[in-house]
Image (cartoon, rainbow, N blue to C red; front, top):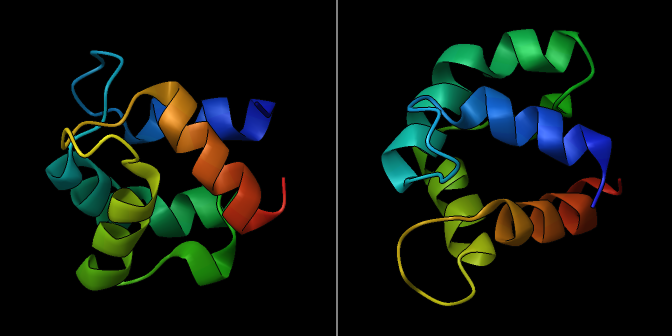
Length: 83
């Protein structure tokens, strides 16, 4: 798991509870995405609309419990973003 994945996970974890919900991912990428991309913490093409953010969430949620752990999230973003 990459350090970039950890930094991005922490930035998206709006409740700071160690888990990501779909709403958190959509809201955080919409509000923080451009700044995260400008700092190199998210690829510019990763800053998408709600549908793209929701698709990222679905791809990462391997066990289907509608919550992402860091491990689930990191595995998907490391693969998708090439980290």
